[in-house]
Length: 114
Length: 108
Image 1 (cartoon, rainbow over the protein chains, first blue to last red):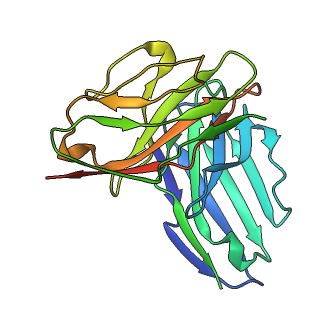
Image 2 (cartoon, chains in turn orange, yellow; image 1 turned 90 degrees about the vertical axis):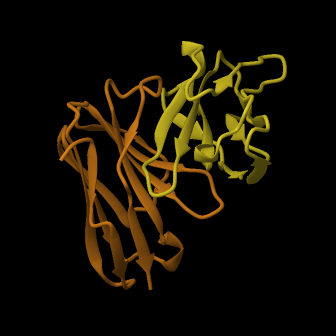
């Protein structure tokens, strides 16, 4: 597998469930990102990790909890979500953690919260 | 406030016609701007960045600081150009601020 992979590709969960999204990058990058893509809204940056440390948290609700155990893996733990959290969640990676450097995106996880 | 505006949600042009996708930005410093593209069933990917002054797939984009714009242009549209196009601005924290995107449809 090359590039950035995300699992699962689709997820349906109830508001009381706990689930996790997984992202893996095979590019040797040192920065990883979680984005939320909702219909008719701009791409929203949720979390940034650079060298496995979180450097950005754009006021994301605590029901979203990121984890970056190493530079190749990124998780997004979900619990007690709301229906408005339904969206496409994109993972991306880049070298050096700077916006100047190209970000490589995964295919996304389509999340539906019932 | 730092912001990227793509005023057109949808743009439809005929094959062979010129294309211009508009992007305006609001930023107090020296901007770094990008265009990303997402073709059907493919991932979001970088198309071009203003600092490179390059032409990719026939597309160019010129930074106009006076008009705070970074419009994406192509003189002759091709059917394979149909996609979602996103303009993005690098902010002072070196992260990207995204526009809402423009869906480009090229009619045969």
